[in-house]
Length: 270
Image (cartoon, rainbow, N blue to C red; front, side, top):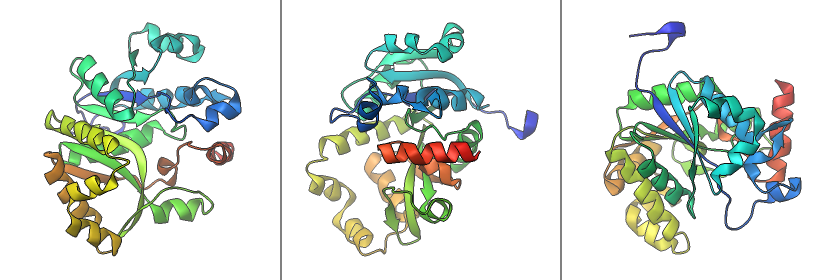
């Protein structure tokens, strides 16, 4: 079952890179004097270019789509010219929120499933990370998989990193900005994501969806990650699994100017 260089044959994923602007503003882009955060240079290379290079290096990724407000903006990124001209890279128009952008792209792209979703502010992403995540997602046998980085691994490598952690009984985890939609049923996760976005100012509705018993278990530190995924599967209506991405760098993206400083330090150390 193994292919060249230890890779196994499998489905070619369409990769979707969410590169739209947040309505509340992008401090990283503003600090750099640029219109979009994805164009901000990271150690001299626009972060969107770094993310696409990682996807291009993955054996599991076929075509790559970028979701952005103005698809013509990709034509200004000279580093992407050859990939765009080859037809492997295309742009789709983003919507008002990340979930709506993902849903719109899934509807626009023919044969969108299996679909890998990531973000343009993940410049530490590598082809090896992508392959490891997708192989693990396929092995999980689920409809949808979400990448999580253990907090212990991240803080051991970068104790000064400021991330948002989900605190379960078996430890804290932070998101890896990697999501795999593996089946048509997995697209239900995008619709649930939309529901969460709509209720973000009414968190009690989100809590009610998960059940107050699960919420109390989480708040008291008794909820395990596996139990949370079982509950999520029931709510979404699709088998949902967490895929652990143990490399610390998988859990670091660029939300704030100080994140950019850390990422550039990491890249220089490489």
